[in-house]
Length: 86
Image 1: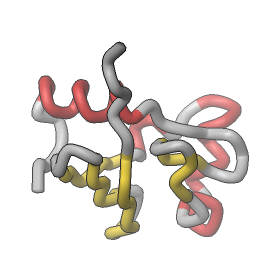
Image 2 (image 1 turned 180 degrees about the vertical axis):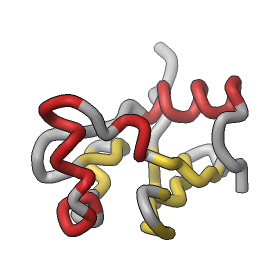
Image 3 (image 1 turned 60 degrees about the horizontal axis):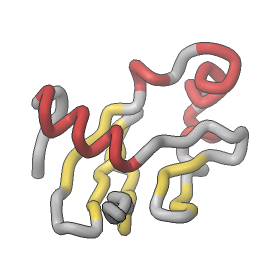
């Protein structure tokens, strides 16, 4: 069985950018803004709500139920080079 990637630290930087550190030492700055669409994502454009993220089970989650899949996040951004690797 393959171990799932986990986020071990998440720190708000600015705008919709969060610095994310994974359990294998990989670290990146994740710009969440493009994902903030639809019924569940749009409310997070309110910066007060956006900043209420937390880690739960190794994933980045918000009080309204919006979350991220750490494996998708890590591999998508690593393959696409879409965001800054720290």
